[in-house]
Length: 234
Ligand SMILES: Nc1ncnc2c1ncn2[C@@H]1O[C@H](COP(=O)(O)OP(=O)(O)OP(=O)(O)O)[C@@H](O)[C@H]1O
Image (cartoon, rainbow, N blue to C red; front, side, top):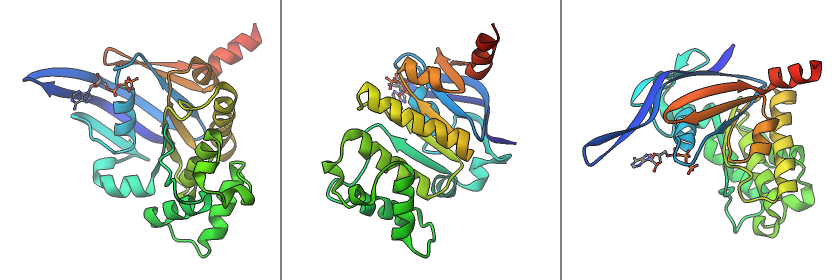
């Protein structure tokens, strides 16, 4: 079943009474277990697209459905707290706290109920490759890649099926970026998450199952899996 569906979604902003179209009647569906990247030139609306998919903003026209229910009807605040997790380029961690405290704070903010929050946070950190020793370090003493892992662990704590990320590897070197992409890919393929990542990086895009390309308000979808399969068959 489709997890997230954009139906005739348009977005524009007005500047000096002139309308600037960012997205024009976009239609697309996102499924569980798939890793998507959103690519396109600067200013093509990638961040806007992600903001709509995570209910940080609403379309000017058209509708967005989550499991067949319109997000507006679910309620934007409820949708953000229960159904979607967001990973940012700059990690958005609290620098004066340890990795563990950051994840526990994330659980508390989301209001997720757990018998033992600390135990659960440690499990999530371990799941993304952060040891219990590293979990007790102040996040600023961790490397960029480790900090991004902590922010992904925080995203995993709310156990949402949908995880969106805006340039999650933008601050990382090539090898570390690759590790984070592998982690996101495995969350999709092995844990059934729907992962949507905005990126400028072609290597990341080539790793995704489907590439959503935005240009001049329009969208094209490339099926990387089909391409890979047909290449393998040649
Ligand atoms: N409310 C607004 N007022 C003015 N300009 C806006 C507004 N909302 C979006 N824009 C403009 O819309 C365009 C699309 O923005 P968006 O950040 O979604 O693009 P992007 O593809 O993510 O760009 P980048 O790759 O540079 O981050 C940009 O030119 C941005 O400046």
